[in-house]
Length: 215
Image (tube, rainbow, N blue to C red; front, side):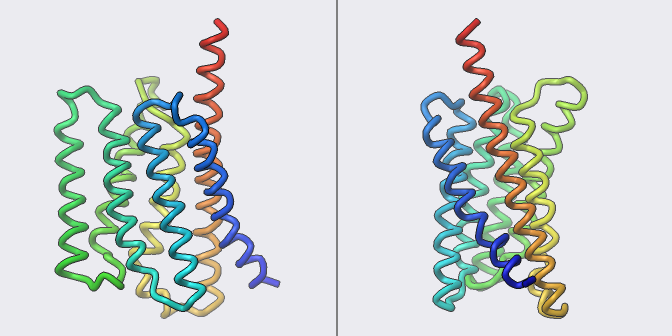
């Protein structure tokens, strides 16, 4: 029974991600520049998830897909956040982003095989996402200008959980099978909650633009 629940929660994320990506795609023309890049990020996530699931079913190593997606996530979320700021204030974000890329590159080329977890690169990427999302959430709490509050909550939640699970992914085999299932079930549940937050943000943006046209 537990295994069936695990499978349902683990794999329902794919159709949910597909649906939300389609919704963003339908609204693409009316989206801001930042959300257009966020849509591309969702599209990359969907493609990598589908390929990863396929490789899992045919009993092939899918960690190389995660390594490729790390670069896509770095690129499109960096642009997503950089577009929040005026040109004169983007230098620090570019510097942080370049540091993340450098860490990803060093990890994937010199420290780990492409079929292994790039622990150091993944850690730097998730810390970058957590830092940027916390900044936006912090500004919201203090009534300052912020961007896409619920997307940032979703990114923070997902990045924080992934940081713990994937950073110590090579150690999961030390735990019992039931503990491993519980951790992956929790991760899959957080992923679905994150996607719901992404969808809610899109609904808010669409509603705001609709109300603006009516006034």
